[in-house]
Amino acid sequence: MAQQKLRSSNWFGKKGKDGFIYRAWMKNQGVPADFFEGKPVIGICNTWSELTPCNGHLRDLAEAVKKGVLEAGGFPVEFPVMSLGETLIKPTAMLYRNLASMDVEESIRANPVDGVVLLCGCDKTTPSLVMGACSVNIPALVISGGPMLKGHWKGKHIGTSDVWRFDVMHKLGQITAAEFLDAEACMARTPGHCAVMGTASTMATMVEALGLSLPNNAAIPAADARRKVISQLSGRRIVEMVKEDLTLSKVLTRKAFENAIMINAAIGGSTNFVIHLLAIAGRIGVDLTIDDFDKYSQKVPLLANIQPSGENYMEDLYYAGGLPAVMKEMENILNKDVITVNGKTLEENFNAAETCCNRDIVSTMEKPFKPDSGIVVVKGNLAPNGAVIKPSAATPALLQHTGKAVVFENIEDYHTRIDDPALEIDATAVMVLKNVGPKGYPGMAEVGNMALPKKLLEQGVTDMVRISDGRMSGTGFGTVVLHVSPEAAAGGTLALVQNGDLITLDAENRSLHLHVEDAEIDRRRAAWKQTEKVHARGYVHLYQMHVEQAHLGADMDFLRGGSGSEVTRDSH
Ligand code: FES
Ligand code: MG
Image (tube, rainbow, N blue to C red; front, top):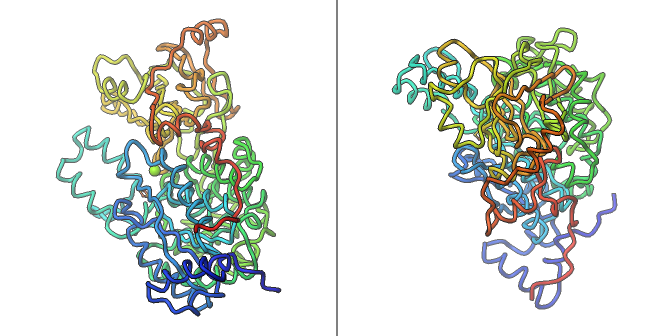
């Protein structure tokens, strides 16, 4: 293969003053000239941060990547980008996903890198890196930080999905405050991201399903030595990818996106997958719609028995054969001929892998754990552009349900009234939460799986239909309708729901209906006023002015597509 001119030679290969400046300051880091001149320069885009605990070990992985890059004759340069920790960032890390993606895009384009390794882990760090890199479209691959090992507490395994259970048990006095505290430390006991199929593991799976990582990236635990091995091998491989000019758009074809949707269904991935995959498709220019998620999920049952849809943990998936074992089961439905970052097809990759060695973790297509999986998209007058629900994490009997709305105008209203003994609510009610969407919260927080009223929990109620324009944690569960579009703060019908209105969720028939006459809806719409704060300055202003609705991926309208990798002007 004829070697094309390296992008980085537009910096380091320059003559005169410009070349002097580009090279001289690299040399102050103790780098001999022949170390970077004429060699593929590999950026290691690192979301390491002590404020993103799930990514706290990524400096170690970067060292392994560097070894691989050097072995293959490249020059590794590690650089930081905005890191989004799911647990600490207020009001929600999602508010900043698009901002981080802008940081990534501009950092890659503006610098002399020929290829880039994206190091990510916690939920939003993966989509923001992939989105940003797509808008530049140079050779890139992803290394995920890997899941934590499962927690051990009082003789049981625990993980993030237990947080929601512990909260209820604590409220009901079934565990003490001391036990609650003890469980914290027992759960998060190793490096890595959430140990269940939450959004982080869903994203790690997504990149492997898209062909953006080496095989087995999804499930190798952070604490397993093989996480460093895959990092080193990825470092070697990205240098080859530069030589082959294997850019992101060659991997991220429409067929690859279809695979990602099918695989997400098979593993019981997070609803957040919908938003992030749509945003990534928008950046790389693949025409993907929210309806594709329903369409391609349809024929896929739940194959991986991992929480929250199942019982086990990501490490169990790895020991059972990892994601390749799941893909192997799906060989009759996947687009097998798509190219992946290692230069091989998806089929070549999963055929080279071990077969499943534990049918309690990865089932066959013939005898799946659950027949229905994936994402169901419901539409109707309450969500003209769609809303999503994950049947594998819901109560089957509630997937077809009509009930009276109990409305919360915003999250503060919910917190104030939910445990008020006077709240008129029973188990048949439909809980409606407004103004937690992209513009409304702002940032579309993970509050859609509202905890049930204490008085109903005490009666033994475990699930109710809940509807909002927000998201839910990928570790959450319940009969929860999310991402209602248009959102309340954009004047969607959701904003017009009143206490006592009847609502029907009919997942089977893909419908979400508000039983109010059109004329009455029009009357309410004419009287509707924006109640949520509109920010007048800063990034949040930019976000509220430009964020698109959930059914489009909640990216900013001006960030769709890409601007390529070329920069024609020099800095001096
Ligand atoms: Fe970071 Fe779950 S909080 S992955
Ligand atoms: Mg989350």
